[in-house]
Structures are given as structure tokens and as C-alpha cells.
Image (tube, rainbow, N blue to C red; front, side):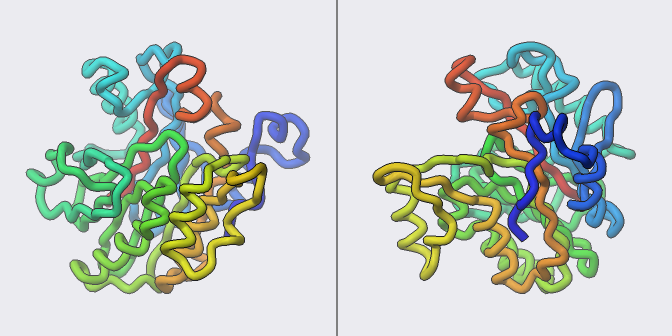
Length: 289
């Protein structure tokens, strides 16, 4: 279901429920180690999938200080990113090889078949899937929607980067189609986690509205008009609807109740921080087994 509860800074103070209680209801919990804080989907973990959505806490990058920036070599030093990734991976219970890609806001899916492919992070893709043991596939975000998919039957898994362009091109659907073709997976068996993203007052222009209209028979319900030619778009809902359209059971989809625009104390936000600092860090969302 779409995210109907968002844990904002204000709700931390005023809500009768604690953050931990809200997270538990939504199927998530925090793992903290050596200052690094990672959001985990409990259902994926219980089915044997290591998973996590990173935060900005516990790193060494100046964004503006001691931030866990996990990508973006144009804005940060290689040594900083390497150390931050080491700290992030250290939060997991064993050693993993991290597989990422050069994301281009497209809809191509990389199949990671061996460790050599896992080590190549320069290929241009916006989703990765694998069934290798001791490998984490990961996508980088800073407002875009990260989606993690695990199939308990085939042991295959995927990470998807779904910005508005990828969402308009149905990248989540294409990742699931790839898992069907390569691993014989059935979407009805999947467990999916939709991570922190810009889900509160994420205003877009006419070009985005037209891109959705060109690709979907119905998309009006995803937009709330704001001013002429502009609207707020619900990318969480759009991706959740795409997941269910492939056969994923709604009860097996878990949406994190965080908006990156509102919680820059925890997450990086391109829209908020690019204006303030001229740069922003990147989060990592990973899954493996």
C-alpha cells in the first residue's frame, strides 16, 4: 500500500507512538553499529535476505560533517567513499561483495552472474539482480525511490533505482521480468521493500506529467496539482502499483515511512541539499544472501 504514515521531525515529538513502534508496524527496524545506522526490512531478513537502506550517519565525508556518503566521486574523495562503504558493509553480519552500477536514470537491468561482474561498477544500469551467495546488489539514491526485491523460492534478488524517469519507464516491472526470464521466478512469491525517498511534496513539472501519461493508461491519481503545469507526484505509490501489477501480493510489499525531503537529519536529499551546499551525498540500498 502507499505510504500513509511518514515519520517527520515533528511527528517524532508529537506522535503518541514511538518511531520504533511505527517502524515495526511498517515492517522495518534499525540496526546500529559503530555509529552507522541502517534501516532493515524484517520480512526480507526473515526469509534469508541481508538487506539495508543506509542513512547519512557514521561516516567521514564533509556533507557537511561526518556523513556516510556512499557514492558520487565528483563531489567527494575516493578515500572517503571507500571508508564509508567499509563502515556500511561492516554493519552486516558477514562479509559481502558489493555490486553497483553507473546509474543513468534509464530502465536497463544488469544480471550479476559472477564476482567479476559484481566488481564492475562502471556499466550503465539502473537495476541489478543476482542469485549469488555473499553478494549484495545495491543502488544509489538521494530522493529517488529504491526498491529491494527478494524471491525466497529461487533465492534471486534485485535492487532497483526508480527516479521519475525510471518509474515512468516501469523499471520495477522490467526488473521483475528479468528475474522471471533468468531465474524462473514468480512475482507472487516475492517480498519487496520500498525505501526512503522524496514522498512528501515532491513537485514536478509538465514534462513528468506528460511522460507518465504517455506510458500509462491511468496516471492522474499519482499527481496532486499545485500550480499551472506543476504537481506533487507520489513515486512510492507509482512503484507499489507497478509491483502489484506484476503479481506481487500487496501484503508482501513494505514501504518505509520516511521522506528524504523532510528527514535530512537521517538521509541525503538532492533537492534540499544541492541548494544549500552545492552538492549532496548518496545513500545505498542493498540486498543479498
